[in-house]
Image (cartoon, rainbow, N blue to C red; front, side, top):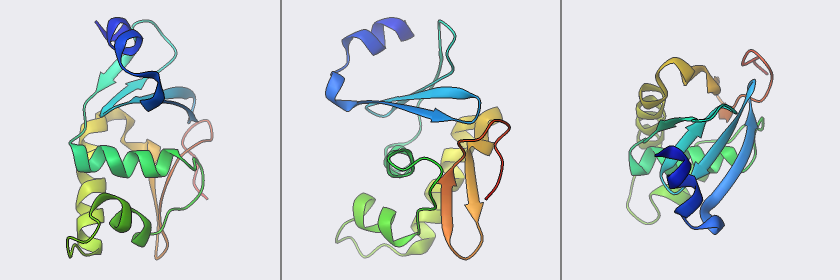
Length: 120
């Protein structure tokens, strides 16, 4: 099923991201984890998926809260708490892979790219 999903969804929405010790495939709102077949599928809420996409565009780099605010909730009067809540929901959706999303105190968060989910 996951293989069919990745084969049939539009290629323009598909992003391969090296993260931690696996490859993430972002396709639409779906996240496919791992290099194994079949890959594990995760379906975060739409807002959380857009935050993940913002992090995945620059894996390993810290993304401050203002950037997801502009991209996920443009013109809606959301505050930084909305970003924090979306990250919390994203971690919950990732379950055992929640450590892929790293908080960098007073700066923002980032997608872990080192084996073992190192910090920095």
